[in-house]
Image (cartoon, rainbow, N blue to C red; front, top):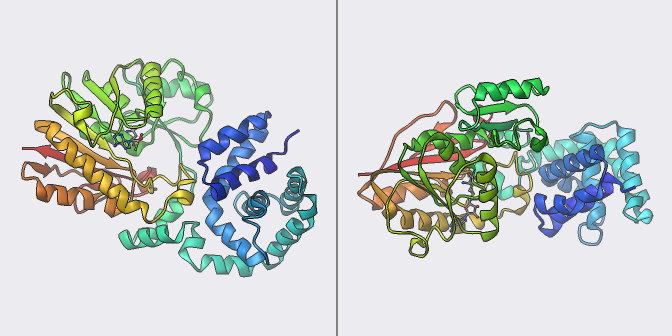
Length: 431
Ligand SMILES: C[S@@+](CC[C@H](N)C(=O)[O-])C[C@H]1O[C@@H](n2cnc3c(N)ncnc32)[C@H](O)[C@@H]1O
């Protein structure tokens, strides 16, 4: 029988110390845990371990005389998980320590069992002192890498504490009812009959919120394509795009197809779904097929239309640009471990390149949405404002939303605003 804590420690070491994504690590380690309850524990441990790594990894620097990260990465990750079980999952002290020590043996490191036991016991004895030290710095208080905590504080000084706290809270599971196949009310009825506490979103017409994440493939209507999983912040795109029957639409950065499918559910448009990564175009096709929708799916570089564009202008263009994903840390806890400060200027350059390359493809009177799931101004208004200054035929359409705040250009939803993911929107129209 495989030990879920030992398996979780290996997965977490893969993510935090060897650069694997959460998805890759889970694909490798989850199949080794056949029992569904143990597998759920594995998932919870790995997600919370990644989320809280910067806090409890720093705690280990206070507790260990010699670091274990390099020589014993899985044992190091297991210790982080021991602290996560004590402080985040709030498991009974005895159970958490005993199970962690047992997991060292499962990792075939029985010689380190005494060390693991001693470190966790020391934490318990000196807990108040260590917590006070960790709480004194924003990066260890909120488990964000230092550069990111500083960037959030610089861009959003008044909101920074709330933003980082929201990044560490469990988000709701949000669904999007597929209008072509059902109504939101009918779907909510079905979900409730299945025992789910499904609620309509207050101001997003297709959104349904469930309090906790679950295996959505087991929810009623999944296979029939009655809904997709999509955070409410992403569902705003269809409202702002306001696409009409008969229009030509380009979704330039489309995989896995969430926003493209929503537009197709809303109106009879002809949609081109472009994606740079060939592997990811398969995800768009799967989602289109399950939701019974059709689009022209292409692989290509949004920044080089000559390689895929047929020369016909588009009435609507969505640029859901590749970005730092700093707005969606609550759903993607591994992002904080992999993103680096010097990724941001490179992403901003790529965003500017795509925006400039696609503007000529927009028909006069047409509308372009520039979207990121970043909360950093460098990827948002600092991309759009200089573009507007350099293009006399472009103007920003003013709008407000029930959650978030106006940016210098466009609108920023910060993580947790209206219990949504962080997302930036600018709506540009061509004169
Ligand atoms: C934020 S995701 C898009 C999410 C999608 N719009 C949705 O709602 O499901 C950005 C996507 O852009 C793709 N991408 C990155 N660079 C690109 C480029 N130069 N041209 C086209 N797609 C690109 C990425 O592979 C990624 O799939």
